Image (cartoon, rainbow, N blue to C red):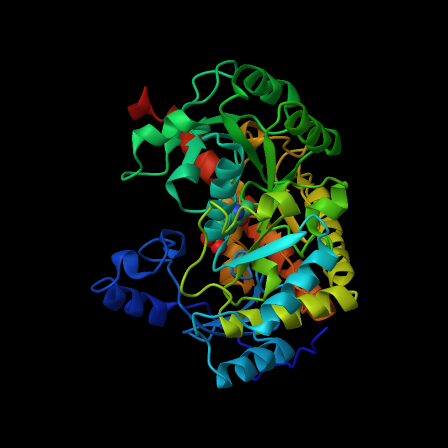
Length: 465
Ligand code: PMP
């Protein structure tokens, strides 16, 4: 664990202001759509903030507000921001150049590390992002099987490419019996793509089997997140993941386990180690290089050998030297230390603390997922699939998240994102998080209750009659 140095500009007790971020947002809007470089970084005209720097478990915005960071860039900073040893390795690599359109010796060293930690990755190919890795994995599955179709699950996320940009519209569901409509994330995604996949409820082996039984002749792969890292961290039930494995074998369909979020986070060998299930092809990214952009596709040798032998894969920036050096250092630390065990125990301790606070106020709650990337769910029973998530009290969560952020605890405002823990989160972070949480919950209760009473009164007012 990196020691956290208390910083002089720790100012969370001063009134919260994001004036500088707001002014920057207005300037940025003139040159950048929504003022940002990803739709998800826009939090609203009056809420979007810009980062100045990060260190360890902390991040500072350009107004010098300091936050304990539970977003970690959607997961990558597993060792904490600006990790000295990882950054030093990356900088050293930079000095000898970053890109030559040729291979380097380090690619093999990192592939060996990945294989040691994730045995399913008998062979490895590198990509730049999770999206790219999943695209490559799907192309590989199609190339190997000669089939075009695939299966995904409601509530999953596999990146921003046409094949994966479809979601189950549970908000528009008219009843609990019919399946939700599957809709595109937005414009620009051809309807034709919809004809290539089935999307089935998570943790429901029977529904998957129904599709495979009927259509396996045209299905190349089942693409699955072992933990729904973009939906509250809902975990696959062990028996479900094993059933998916067994059905893929029985129906001659490849199993792609998308470990972009879970890889090198929930265990040294990712979810595959945790569940004892082996993919035909797996994808890994985020925690692999502590924030440098690199991803990997791993898989069975006879499948992976199709790369370069019929299946195309490459790219100017693949296995870029800085990211590769960062990956080597990060993976070595994760493999040789107890960093991931520390991450998990912090997550468990945080959940216990949060639970005590909520229980003390009779607020129903539960946690989904692995403690290193757990989701807070404001209902007694944790969700089992995306449809369950709909039943949570997200008005309460949304209000609470706003108060937490304004008090220096940077959780994800979207209740579907889990809280990510890094090895740099320490006891001081935990104490501060819990005391802030307590304060934020009390304010939220008053506010949400106040809104409810006001609504009740206006409903009963004479003008409303
Ligand atoms: N797969 C999963 C499971 C993910 O969580 C993500 C990103 N959140 C992706 C793929 C896409 O990764 P990227 O954002 O690096 O393209």
